[in-house]
Amino acid sequence: MSPLLRRLRALLPVRADFIAMARNPRRDLLAGLTVAVVALPLALGFGVSSGLGAEAGLATAVVAGALAALFGGSNLQVSGPTGAMTVVLVPIVAQYGPGGVLTVGMIAGVIVIGLAVLRAGRYMAYIPASVVEGFTLGIALVIGLQQVPNALGVPKPEGDRVLEVTWNAVEAFVQNPNWTAVAIALGVAALMLGGARWRPGIPFSLVAVVAATVVAQALHLDAAAPIGDLPAGLPAPSLDFLDLSAFGSLLAPAVAVAALAALESLLSAQVADQMTVGQKHDPDRELFGQGLANLVAPLFGGVPATGAIARTAVNVRTGASSRLAALTHAAVLAAIVFAAAPLVSKIPLAALAGVLIATAVRMVEVGSLRAMAKATRSDAVVLVLTAVATLALDLVYAVIIGFLVAGALALRAVAKQARLAEVDFRADLPGEHSAEEHALLAEHIVAYRIDGPLFFAAAHRFLLELAEVADVRVVILRMSRVTTIDATGALVLKDVVEKLNRRGIVVLASGIRPGQRRALDSVGALELLRLDGREFATTPEAIAGARAHLQGAGVLPAPTHLSGQSAAATPAPTAASVPVQPTGRPGGRTAKAGKTLR
Image (cartoon, rainbow, N blue to C red):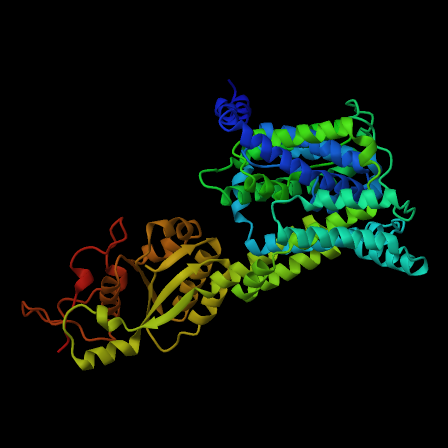
């Protein structure tokens, strides 16, 4: 079997998934029914908000919900249309029309499947929490603003920028107020928010929508515009919407949709894991399931889907333990599509707007935002910047901007950890020495300890600090505490050595770790030290080499030997004469020449 086929086989459901569905069927069926009740108004609302209509939202919840539940990597994930995806789809609908959105969904599905095959799911862990919180806040703001036209009972103005559309809707309302729609939207939102505090277990979203529909029909409120006619059942699969000639122009939006589908689905699966004990999702299988769902849903008129955090949370809280719950949720919604389409079509658009406004409010976790803002100034900056970018640009650009800014700030913080500190080398000076010798050595030798990472973000500051060394003959660089070094850091170190050498200052290095040698060797810095015998395993050996160099240069008196041989007869070794073994250790006795000066 080829590696590709083996990889695809690893992404398919396994026998254990089906065994788990048979363990607690009654509890899973009840959880799935509860999730379906919560999901119905959300699916209708997000379908309307996307611009493809309520039937598109229902088709997505049924088809994508079933496929993602069966083929995904989480036992508890519930998928369907979401507010975040709606934010991305609105400008695509405005530019390319409904057919363009369906084509984008299919292309995005192929891309997400490709990510699963390439094992890209594991990289989700590298997205900073401040970026996640920022775009969640931005999504909530966009979802809330998108509901303004329906909540005010005015036709949706043209445009794909949410702030512009909202402003135009407010102007239209001022010219022709529709207080009935406003009352319905605010009443539904208030009932949902208040009811959730009073009785969290009751699906107040459905209660509020039913109540609003009954009141609107009983009082014949013409100002409360209904959803409109819905088809009784799912449409037959079709590829009529495909326009391959527009593939090139649709590729960029498809990449954005695929990125969001992968990101939000993995986030939702991660939330499900955190809410349970013993559950752990497979990120690559989850991507495969979401990709397959997005590939198939457009065939039935569905919009792109993702894992839905709110519905997944309801699923977990109501006791779901396997994929059977999410499959039940899709089956119940399918039954509603086939059996209750005429009733669903009478729901006022203002009621769905109220549902989504309440959903947007509940998405904002004030405690999490406050904690993130207080954590560090960098986290606060990234959070606000990501939220503003989501509101002003779009979600994908916002995530990219937030990720890049977070990365730059993180590099800045890591670079600040790099330290170049002058240290007292006398504690490592071999032998016993007089105060005069200490003073004499201190006039000619200086030792620096490099702490932390020596990489591109910190290396040039290191060069500026070290280049200021003056009035000494030998510089010892203690490198045992360097945590990492890259090519830039190695080049800067080589540059420092060459510049100091040109000024007549000898540079010795001690404690170079094996992991640092590759970068140093690649740019010639290691060879520069090794050729002149200026690399030492330990600081005491480097100090001995420095003394030997100073003695050879006549700066220090030659050592007095115990054999009585005159100093003139035995010339003191220079640092260049101190041999270095292949391990980097200086060899023999010459490294310890001259213990005392008399």
